Image 1 (cartoon, rainbow, N blue to C red):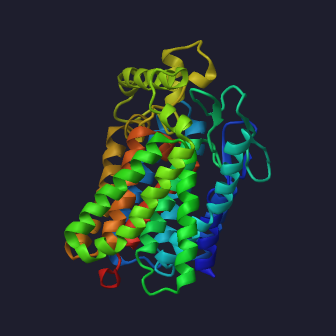
Image 2 (tube, one colour):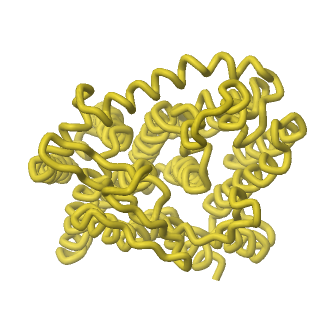
Image 3 (cartoon, helix red, strand yellow):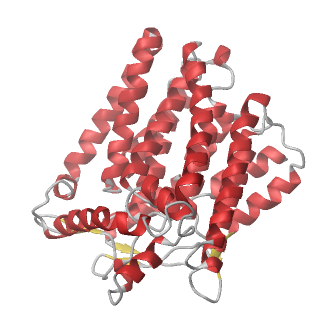
Length: 415
C-alpha cells in the first residue's frame, strides 16, 4: 500500500491542482497533501544506513533555511514558500524508502507525463491552451500578452506548457523522462518484443515533446547528460555502451526529424537578432548586473525564500510587476534567498549524494552512471533557470532526481 501511494504521487506530480489562499500568492498543492498523508502512513521509513547521511544533511538544510525566514523581507510569504521546500524534502525521503522499487518509480514518472504531453501537443498545434481550475490548468493563447511564444521568421508559435506553469518546466520534466526511457530501454534485452515496441513508441512521443517545449535549457541539459553518461559508460563498460548505441542513434534520429518539422521556431531560439530572443538575452544580462546589489543586502542570512522579486522591487520601484523576476540561475538564487551559510549546507547535502555515486561508479556500477546523467540534467538546468528553487514543480523534480541518483546506486550487482 505504501509503495502504491508513492507511485500515485509520482503519477500526479505534473498536475498543478492547488488551493490558493486569499492573498492570491501563496498556495498548497493537492500532491503536497498526498505526500504528507503518505509520509505519516509510512510511519517509520526504511532507509538504508548509507542513505541516512544525505537525509540528515537535508534536515539541516530545512532547519537552516527556516532560520532565514526570520530575516526575510516578507516573513509570511517566505514561510509559506518554505513549506514547499519541506514537502519536497518529504518526497525525497519517501523515494529513498526501500519498500519503493526504483525501476517502478522511473516507469511511473514517465507514464505520468503522457497526458501532460498530449495537452502540450494540442497547445502547440492549435496555438491555444484551455483552462481548468480543477486540474490546475491556466489559459494561454498565442496572441495573449505574457504568454511564452516563439516568433519565427514566418509565424508565431505557442510553446508547450502541458500541465505546468511554464514551458521550461515542461521541458525539464520531459528531458528527465526521456533520459529515464533510455536508461530503461538499455535494460530490456530479456524483455518480450512487444515490451520494447512500447518503449520505442514512448521514445518517439517524448522526443517530440522535448522539441516542442522549445526550451534551450532542457535541450542542452539532455544532450550533455547523454554525453557525460555515454562517455562514462564507454570508459567503464564498453559492452553495455555498444548495446545501447542503437537506442541512442534512434533518439538522435527522431530528434533530428522533429527539429526538421519545426525548423522555423527551433532555429529562431538561436537567433538573437529576432525581437523576442533579443529581449530575452537583454533581460538575462540585466539580471546578472543586478545580482550583486540584491546579494549584498543580507549575504549571510539571506533575504528569505521567495524574496528575490521583492528585493528587486525595493531597488527599482515603479516598474511593471512582471519585470520583477528571480535570476535565471538556481544556484545564485539559493545563495541570495537563504544566505551563504545555508547554501554551504545545501552543497554538503548534494556532495554527500555525489560521493555515494562516485564510489558506486568506481565499483563498476552501470546504474550509478545513469545517476550521473540525472545529476547532469539538474546542474545544467540549475545554471540556466530558476524554477528548480522558485517553484513547487521544480523542487519536486529536484527531489525526484536526487533521490533517483541514490537509489540507482543502491546495488551495483544488479546493474
